[in-house]
Length: 176
Picture: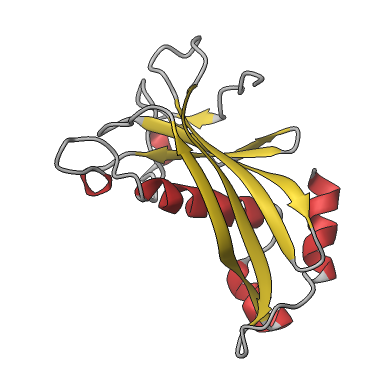
Protein backbone atom coordinates (compact mmCIF):
# COMPACT_ATOMS: atom_id res chain seq x y z
CA UNK A 1 0.00 0.00 0.00
CA UNK A 2 1.31 3.44 -0.82
CA UNK A 3 2.09 5.85 1.99
CA UNK A 4 -0.61 8.36 2.80
CA UNK A 5 0.39 12.03 2.89
CA UNK A 6 -0.11 13.99 6.07
CA UNK A 7 -3.44 15.83 6.12
CA UNK A 8 -3.68 19.57 6.03
CA UNK A 9 -3.57 20.91 9.56
CA UNK A 10 -4.51 24.08 11.31
CA UNK A 11 -3.18 25.59 14.50
CA UNK A 12 -4.88 26.00 17.86
CA UNK A 13 -6.32 29.37 16.81
CA UNK A 14 -8.61 27.58 14.37
CA UNK A 15 -11.32 27.19 17.02
CA UNK A 16 -13.23 24.14 18.22
CA UNK A 17 -12.74 20.85 16.43
CA UNK A 18 -16.46 20.37 15.73
CA UNK A 19 -16.17 16.65 16.42
CA UNK A 20 -13.04 16.06 14.40
CA UNK A 21 -10.14 14.31 16.10
CA UNK A 22 -6.89 15.99 17.07
CA UNK A 23 -3.78 14.16 15.86
CA UNK A 24 -0.53 14.05 17.85
CA UNK A 25 1.15 17.43 18.23
CA UNK A 26 -2.07 19.32 18.97
CA UNK A 27 -2.99 20.04 15.37
CA UNK A 28 -6.14 18.70 13.78
CA UNK A 29 -7.01 17.68 10.22
CA UNK A 30 -8.95 20.38 8.43
CA UNK A 31 -11.01 17.77 6.58
CA UNK A 32 -10.81 14.39 4.90
CA UNK A 33 -8.54 14.10 1.89
CA UNK A 34 -8.15 11.96 -1.21
CA UNK A 35 -5.08 10.21 -2.58
CA UNK A 36 -5.82 9.05 -6.10
CA UNK A 37 -9.13 7.24 -5.83
CA UNK A 38 -8.91 6.61 -2.06
CA UNK A 39 -10.62 8.92 0.43
CA UNK A 40 -9.26 9.14 3.98
CA UNK A 41 -11.13 10.38 7.07
CA UNK A 42 -9.49 10.79 10.50
CA UNK A 43 -11.25 9.21 13.49
CA UNK A 44 -10.16 9.54 17.13
CA UNK A 45 -10.87 6.60 19.47
CA UNK A 46 -12.95 7.68 22.49
CA UNK A 47 -13.97 5.84 25.69
CA UNK A 48 -17.34 5.02 24.11
CA UNK A 49 -15.54 3.09 21.35
CA UNK A 50 -13.71 0.71 23.68
CA UNK A 51 -14.73 -2.47 25.49
CA UNK A 52 -13.96 -3.62 29.04
CA UNK A 53 -10.48 -4.66 27.89
CA UNK A 54 -9.66 -1.14 26.75
CA UNK A 55 -9.57 -1.90 23.03
CA UNK A 56 -11.95 -0.83 20.28
CA UNK A 57 -15.04 -3.04 20.31
CA UNK A 58 -15.03 -4.97 17.03
CA UNK A 59 -18.42 -3.71 15.79
CA UNK A 60 -17.30 -0.09 16.13
CA UNK A 61 -15.07 -0.48 13.08
CA UNK A 62 -18.30 -0.71 11.06
CA UNK A 63 -19.34 2.64 12.57
CA UNK A 64 -15.97 4.13 11.62
CA UNK A 65 -16.42 2.77 8.08
CA UNK A 66 -19.89 4.32 7.91
CA UNK A 67 -18.53 7.73 8.96
CA UNK A 68 -15.82 7.57 6.32
CA UNK A 69 -18.30 6.57 3.57
CA UNK A 70 -20.63 9.41 4.55
CA UNK A 71 -17.80 11.96 4.59
CA UNK A 72 -16.48 10.58 1.29
CA UNK A 73 -19.85 11.15 -0.37
CA UNK A 74 -20.01 14.62 1.19
CA UNK A 75 -16.48 15.28 -0.14
CA UNK A 76 -17.81 14.37 -3.61
CA UNK A 77 -20.61 16.91 -3.18
CA UNK A 78 -23.25 14.27 -2.44
CA UNK A 79 -25.27 14.79 0.73
CA UNK A 80 -27.26 11.73 1.74
CA UNK A 81 -30.20 13.79 3.01
CA UNK A 82 -30.26 15.67 -0.30
CA UNK A 83 -30.29 12.36 -2.19
CA UNK A 84 -33.20 11.16 -0.09
CA UNK A 85 -35.19 14.35 -0.69
CA UNK A 86 -34.35 15.03 -4.36
CA UNK A 87 -33.77 11.54 -5.75
CA UNK A 88 -36.23 9.64 -3.53
CA UNK A 89 -33.72 6.98 -2.59
CA UNK A 90 -30.93 6.07 -0.23
CA UNK A 91 -28.02 3.72 0.19
CA UNK A 92 -28.38 0.74 2.51
CA UNK A 93 -25.73 -1.77 3.52
CA UNK A 94 -26.46 -5.18 2.04
CA UNK A 95 -23.23 -7.06 2.80
CA UNK A 96 -20.13 -6.66 4.96
CA UNK A 97 -16.89 -8.59 5.15
CA UNK A 98 -14.44 -7.51 7.81
CA UNK A 99 -11.02 -8.82 8.79
CA UNK A 100 -9.34 -7.68 12.00
CA UNK A 101 -5.55 -7.44 12.07
CA UNK A 102 -4.52 -5.46 15.18
CA UNK A 103 -6.35 -3.82 18.09
CA UNK A 104 -6.83 -0.09 18.53
CA UNK A 105 -6.95 1.68 21.88
CA UNK A 106 -8.23 4.82 23.58
CA UNK A 107 -6.90 8.08 22.05
CA UNK A 108 -5.51 6.38 18.95
CA UNK A 109 -5.86 8.39 15.77
CA UNK A 110 -7.21 6.22 12.97
CA UNK A 111 -7.18 6.94 9.26
CA UNK A 112 -10.28 5.33 7.77
CA UNK A 113 -10.33 4.94 3.99
CA UNK A 114 -13.00 4.39 1.36
CA UNK A 115 -12.45 3.37 -2.26
CA UNK A 116 -14.85 2.02 -4.87
CA UNK A 117 -13.95 -1.59 -5.52
CA UNK A 118 -16.86 -2.35 -7.85
CA UNK A 119 -19.75 -0.33 -9.28
CA UNK A 120 -22.94 -1.93 -10.51
CA UNK A 121 -26.23 -0.44 -11.68
CA UNK A 122 -27.86 -0.60 -8.25
CA UNK A 123 -24.94 -1.17 -5.86
CA UNK A 124 -21.39 -0.19 -5.01
CA UNK A 125 -18.79 -2.30 -3.26
CA UNK A 126 -16.52 -0.12 -1.16
CA UNK A 127 -13.12 -1.28 0.04
CA UNK A 128 -12.40 0.20 3.45
CA UNK A 129 -9.51 0.15 5.88
CA UNK A 130 -8.85 1.44 9.37
CA UNK A 131 -5.21 2.34 9.83
CA UNK A 132 -3.39 3.46 12.97
CA UNK A 133 -1.63 6.79 12.49
CA UNK A 134 1.58 6.35 14.49
CA UNK A 135 2.72 9.25 16.72
CA UNK A 136 5.91 9.51 14.64
CA UNK A 137 4.73 11.37 11.53
CA UNK A 138 7.47 9.70 9.45
CA UNK A 139 6.22 6.18 10.16
CA UNK A 140 3.75 4.40 7.91
CA UNK A 141 0.21 3.78 9.17
CA UNK A 142 -0.48 0.25 10.45
CA UNK A 143 -3.42 -1.78 9.16
CA UNK A 144 -5.91 -2.52 11.94
CA UNK A 145 -9.01 -3.63 10.06
CA UNK A 146 -9.95 -4.15 6.41
CA UNK A 147 -13.39 -4.57 4.99
CA UNK A 148 -15.54 -4.75 1.93
CA UNK A 149 -18.93 -3.09 2.27
CA UNK A 150 -21.64 -3.47 -0.36
CA UNK A 151 -24.22 -0.68 -0.42
CA UNK A 152 -27.34 -0.81 -2.53
CA UNK A 153 -29.55 2.01 -3.78
CA UNK A 154 -33.21 1.63 -2.80
CA UNK A 155 -36.40 3.67 -3.14
CA UNK A 156 -37.10 5.38 0.21
CA UNK A 157 -40.65 4.12 0.85
CA UNK A 158 -40.69 0.65 -0.70
CA UNK A 159 -37.00 -0.16 -0.06
CA UNK A 160 -36.94 -1.84 -3.49
CA UNK A 161 -33.63 -1.76 -5.36
CA UNK A 162 -33.28 0.90 -8.07
CA UNK A 163 -30.54 2.18 -10.32
CA UNK A 164 -28.06 4.49 -8.64
CA UNK A 165 -28.88 8.07 -9.75
CA UNK A 166 -26.77 9.51 -12.56
CA UNK A 167 -25.69 12.42 -10.34
CA UNK A 168 -23.98 9.95 -7.98
CA UNK A 169 -22.27 7.96 -10.73
CA UNK A 170 -21.09 11.16 -12.44
CA UNK A 171 -19.58 12.45 -9.19
CA UNK A 172 -17.79 9.13 -8.67
CA UNK A 173 -16.38 9.13 -12.20
CA UNK A 174 -15.27 12.77 -12.01
CA UNK A 175 -13.35 12.34 -8.76
CA UNK A 176 -11.88 8.87 -9.05
